[in-house]
Structures are given as structure tokens and as C-alpha cells.
Image (cartoon, rainbow, N blue to C red; front, side, top):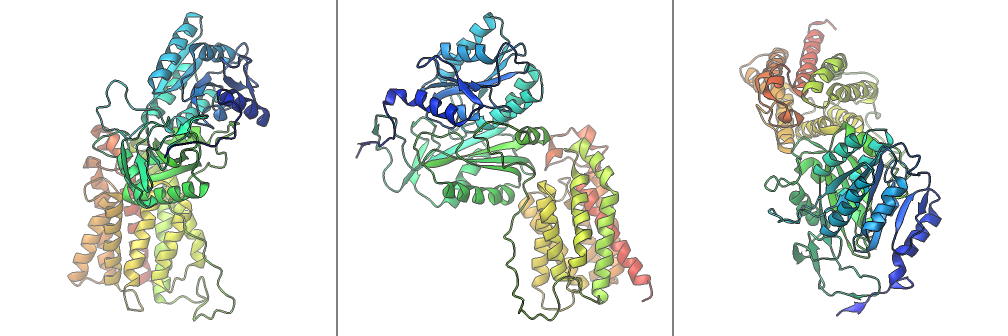
Length: 594
């Protein structure tokens, strides 16, 4: 049954102007133009179009989406926000007033959500401003991934992903880029982001009756942000199921909404629609990250959770996924004074987070103290030299790996691997080396703590799978057969979660030949050290052979074959390097008298 929604307001016709008054009272860095009620523009208090020497970033649209758009006005983000009435595009005169107020000789960029009213009104204002001598560029954002193509003349709607475009454009402008370059970065960002929303309730416009469109136990998939019906109504499901569905829709290779494939780095935004508790938003984020990592093979570099673009008092959330690179991450991390941007989110997001272990009781008795044993047995000594040699080999290879990765990726493979190797060497003093199984687990923990991106999570998976395989053995000493089985299990896990296999030009092209030779030589009766050495030669040969492979995974898949033909895959070379170094160290240790 429909009913009048309860609102803490005065006159429904004054909600936008009174919101603006409260906003500028709260944040001293904001002002508004004295043109109420027709002109509703929030702008930076420190900017005047007569003297401003950087590109002005202007956005806006209908109100009711707070904190968007006025809450994102500030140094490093929007220069001005044009506020329309609730769910109504702002008038041309209001948009023009905003352009005139903040645009200097460097010009302005209009970031417009893809709705017909917004496009028309901002478009007319842009043309008028140009006729007055202003330099104006426009970027249209349509990040909606709910409706299957074709989408007709209207195209995809602009949703919460627009906020990420605001931040990237604002940071580019703050860095002093030209109007053309700022517009190019914003346009590129708009093409890399996809969004889909889920609603549990219908919003209530001020002074109006709440629609009774959704019954109890129902949810709406693929909604817009103006209270319009979504793409489908379904039974309410656990958030796990909802998040999986939304991510699959955004990342669907059939619809190809966004150019995101396995091995990519991404940014995640979980956005509340107005009436969703922070607890529920955090639950959705907590489920989305591992699904992106393990089900879709993506490295999650940043996570933003909160209410960014709402729909008044609607219950529900939207998820945005944006393909990331170093420039985008730099823009997102850049300082801003915009009141509602989450300033606490910067720096690399760990590939996996686990709870801090509970401190052990001091009364606990153990056969062996935690950490490194006072005296190493034979297995512990061999493990020590192998780990040390493998880590040092990676450290020495840092510059070469970065050089190779600079040609086929983003240039940080060596630095990422170096962080992992350095940490392993530092942590080794606390490894329980006499227990090979637990040592492998500790190596994975060290890597997980410091190695970001795809390579970090893949090596965590590698170590965890090896640990699980070794743990399943009932023998107290790890045999060469156990090690071979652990390597095989690790390769299977990396292939399963990473999506690659032999010939895809990845680390597996070094490890798969190594595993094959190791098992063959052990079955043929070779002694373990010889089998290890021969398998390490196969790893090197496999890594070198990646020069002749067409990339089918990771960022290398976007590089031309001519470039790839001159460069080995850095991930494969890194794997072959540490594997070969460990084998040589074990050989040397085996030949050295006690």
C-alpha cells in the first residue's frame, strides 16, 4: 500500500537550496552563487574565473544523489557543481553561470552523466559558453551495465562510476595538464568503468507518495538512480549471490561493457543508494574483493566503500569496477579537499587480507619454540640455502625484470618481486626451517604481506596450494616425491584461479616444464638433486620460449607480436630464476662435506 514518506524537510520546493546552505555552512572551502532558486551552483571558495589558471572541472545534474555532485567540489576534484531540482537536469542558465564563475583562460571540462536532459542542457550551455570565448570540452559518462545491447539512441546511463571520473579529471587538472589532456584522461577513464545497481526499496521524492512497486522479499536488479524501474525484479538473495551476479554482469565478455579481462588491475567502488547501512556496504565489499581476485582473476588495487551517488532514501547498492593502471591510481591517490571523497583510501591494496593471529597463551607448551629452531637438521639446512639463493636471484634480476615488463606490461614486475624476495630474506630468521611444510606456509604469508598486483596473489595461491599438498602427507620428512607433488598442486591452483595454462606466456611456461621433467626424472630413478637440476634447466628453456608465444593472459595480451618476439615474459623469467638458483644451491650443499 502506498503512503506519504516521512521527511525532515520544510517546503518540498526548497530542499535543494536549503541543502546547499547547510553544505556551505559545514565546509568553509565551499560557496554558492547568489542566484537562488533558479541558479543553484556550488563552487570552490578559492576559485575565481578571472584569475584561475588551471582547467576547471564542472559537473552536476539532478539533485537527490547526495553527496553527488556538490559534495565532491574541492581542490583536486570538482571546481563547481550545478544542482538541478530533485531528479531534474539543471537549467542552461544555471550551468552557464557556473561556467562563467570558475572558468579562466585554461578552459573548463564538463563531465555529464548520460541522460537526455543532462546532455541537452549541458550541451546548449557549452555551445553558448564557446560563443562567449570560453574554451569548453565535454565528456559523457555512461557506465551502466544493466541493460543488454543494443541500448538504442539513449545509450548507457551515467551512474556511480562518474565519481571516479570526477576524481581522475580533478587530479589531472590540479597537476596542471592542458584542457585537451584533462579531457583525454577523463574520457579514457569513462571508457574503463562499469556499474550495476541493486535496490531493495523504492525511493520517496520530497512531498510525494512512496510507490509500492516492490513487494516484500523482492529486489530490483539494474536500476537507475532516479527511481525508475530496473531491468528485472527477483527474489531477495544473500549478498554473496547478489555480488556474484552483479560482477558477472559488469565483466561479461559477451556484452563487453568494459575492457577488463583476467590479469587486469582494477578499482572497486561499492556505493550505497541512500538508506543502506554502512555494515551492509562493508559486507558487500568484503565479498566482492575475493570474488574479483579468485573468480575473475583480477588484482584489486583500491576499494572505495560508502555513499557516493545515492537515490534519496533508496535501500540497495551499486558496484563499479574500473580498469586501473599507474596513471589512474596516481590520480585517485592524489590529494583533494573535496568533502566526501574517502581520503583514507590510498596506497596499494594487499592481494589478500587475513585476520591477525590470536596471541598464543604464555602457558602453551610446544615441542619446539615458535620461529627458527636453535639447531637446524639436515632438511632445515638444505631449505635455508635454497630459500636464500632463490630470493637473492630475484633481487639481482630486479632491473632486468622491470625492463622486460616495461616493454610488455606496466614495468613493475622486478620491483614487486624484489619486495617479496627482500621480505622473505628478512622473515627467514623466524621460519621453522626444520618443518618444511610450515616454512612454505610462512613464505606465502611473507609474500602476501608485501607483494601487490596479480603476481602477488598468484604466488600466495602457489604457496598455499603447496602447503595444503605437503600437509596432506603423513610422513615427518618431506621427500622428493612430496616436493614434486606440491609443485604440481601449486601449478594446478595457479592455473585454476589465474586462468592461464601452458603456452599463455606466463610464469606457468617455466613451472610446467620444470614439473614435468622433475616427475619424469624421479620416476626414471635419478637421484633427487640431479632431477631438480634437470628440471631447473627445463624451467629456463620454458621461460626463454615465451619470446615465441602469443600472449593470452595479462597485460601482455594487448601488446603487438613484434614487440613480444624480442622480450621473454618477465613472470616466467622470474620463476625460472628462483627455481634454478634453488636447484644450484641444493647441489652445492649436497657436494659440500658436513
